Amino acid sequence: MNAFLIDPRNYQITFLSAFLLYGTWALGWETDPQKLIIILSTCLGTQALGCLIFKKDISSLKSAVITSLGLTILLKANDLSTYALAAFLAIACKFIFRSGGKHFFNPANFGIIMVIFLTGDAWISPGQWGASGILFFMVGILGFTVLYKVNRIDIGLFFLITLFALDYSRMIIYQGWTHDVIFHKYTNGSLLLFAFFMITDPVSTPSGILTRRFFAITVAVTTFYLQSFMQLHTAPVWALFFISPVTVILDKLMRAPNFKWITQ
Image (cartoon, rainbow, N blue to C red; front, side, top):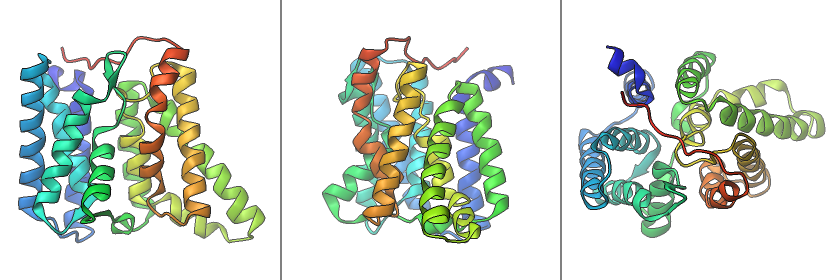
């Protein structure tokens, strides 16, 4: 039991699995077992091959499980081969796009964006979660637990607070909308999952305290622009993809030890 509690990846796997089950049973998602099997097996197979070639710790298979769950929850496609390609690209990017001893793209984020670019058969459905106070409470509590274990609460908070301040200024103060509109937006499950489980990836985000907060603010500002002026409803995922390479520069400006998973 103690071994389970020490490794934060176990929390992420447990909570993401709970979200997947919640979506399937409570929200009525059509979850194809073949989709889950293909994504999971491709992620694990690619990770195992990468570990063999690059001599990495086999415990990183847990990270592949986390990526597979993220892809299963967020990615939609018509063809099963699209899911396989997304899973392969998600894991492969960890071994290809590296700087300073770590990868700088969030794997699930990279896999989703690349298959949207390459296939025309993939999309994200932010409306699948709906919006409710119960969902906000559940994702918030579980998300904060994970971020506390990896010491990355600041990234999620800086992202959400910055985005909320910009949205509030535009929607409530400038446009005069009612507060229930902004409440509806910030109880959306896709936004909460992004804030607590994607932008906060401790391995791919900047290592320094100030630089990762700057990173979170930059992603929030980019998200606000894409949502408000480009009408892109999946803006957070796109913003993270385009801003992720900045991590390389930020890590060189402020050097700090890279995050390491505590496995024992």
